[in-house]
Figure (tube, rainbow, N blue to C red):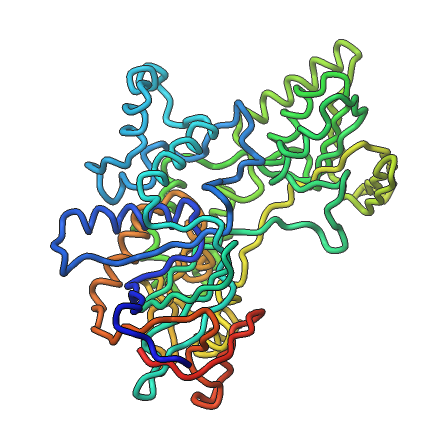
Length: 470
């Protein structure tokens, strides 16, 4: 590897964030606020990389009348810093809607509006993020027998670049889940892409939609498609007798409190499982009672008028789906009788939720230095830092994928502001040792594989070159 001139030295970041969804936007804000009130010597240097061309959060589900399921006070900052200039209320003030919102007397904004708030907040810290940049691998940097830095390989339109960090924060979000054997197609959708795919139907007259699922997204899909296509039949398929209402009572909502994270983290495994069983109905496969009532009222009204377009195939499951160029055939099977109903539809929408991505999937050989529990799950400390082998000194923090250790708020907005404050405090408390800064050519590996007895080459990236030390 060619030697770098001092003027070519690349900075070593205190923190690199992978992904720039709401959680890492909140972290960028926390860092910005910390740096604003700290001297230059205490400032945290950070860079975030996001593969999307711009900020976006569940764009496919921004139905015009859908509302948030959490209070606006659980925004990106308020629970951590009520005086923050990045709050939802400050956003409303900047848009001239603060008084109107107060007069609205509602804790739950439209989802479209909260997305605009996220965009507004992200734009104020856009100096910390590089959009259209995909992290494709991470390699360790070895010094004195330990790994104290990590090189992050990023792909953009300009090619591959390597950035060095003392800590990583992984916030890559969730991925849409489809039943085994089902693949997306022109007529088979996941709810995450609803609005985009519906736009492709403009100018057509679909006759039937089938929506599979029993949660909030499923019910919203049913209501939206029924309203959007007034001539089409909408068939809802789920295994229950009806949608189950979400438990949003004051006592049950304490499961989302910051203190509940401490209690859950400290609880033994059997208690953790019981808590999730007790309070899963605050978030999973449940629907707002107002929406349930609206759908039932509409179904009954259509029965009275003899114009039934809204059908509920309950206590049933989708047994098979076959897509052809002209249509998609859904086979719905009763769980009670085994009777099968064939539905020829224009579209089948799966509102079957999301699953977490392997948080260590990008880490290559670094993942081998991250410890797992008896069930193969990543071990995570209370400050959201992955528990690692002593040979790995760099911090790897998770925003999401910690439900087994930190509880139900792992991937939810409810505790985001508090969580990012705890991650930043951990980075600061653990210190930022000085290091020699070197240039990082895009074709340079962090170390030769033979210099450590574990794989170190980044997955999917061909990095060749000499040894680099931090």
